[in-house]
Length: 226
Image 1 (cartoon, rainbow, N blue to C red):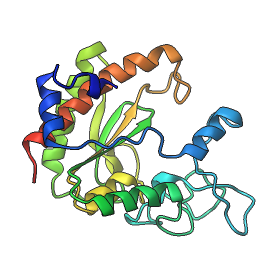
Image 2: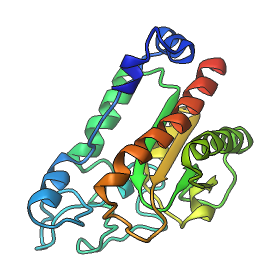
Image 3: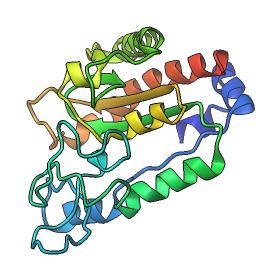
Image 4: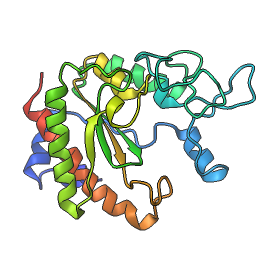
């Protein structure tokens, strides 16, 4: 892992790790991930059963308790953006919520998705400006600039609702509303040529450029603890 191998080699990473703990969740929807490998390559939702419906799963990024069941989510179990029967109904979401609430003192929350080359911050459920929007926008633009320095990949920056579309029940909105100021979502490569089926030869270049964006955010958090 890059962040481990750079410890005591990169002064910035060393100082970050000596000041903060970093928790990584490589796959937030493991059952859904396995299903993409065995049945449906473009499966989006969890694999939970929905009583009274033959349709499976809920969109885990509409299931958080942040304006749950609001704009950009559906109450139809067959929809790709079905919000689930209630907030945190999906074990994948509840597990993260429980971990964060039990641990406490989180300063930053970053959610990695694909695709569209976007770097977004709250809110998704409302067009209203987040109280820390000015700082979040500044940090996101610095991160996007660092990312672009690797191979010129350009990211659009802004609040979720106006940058892409309204989306209630998202992870970063929940994080922000629960006191985690630095909450961001990356939508990784590309902008539609390959979409979700990004060629394997773009995995490492995507990781290399994204790393610099993440590092920029972590440096800002390190220097601006609250």
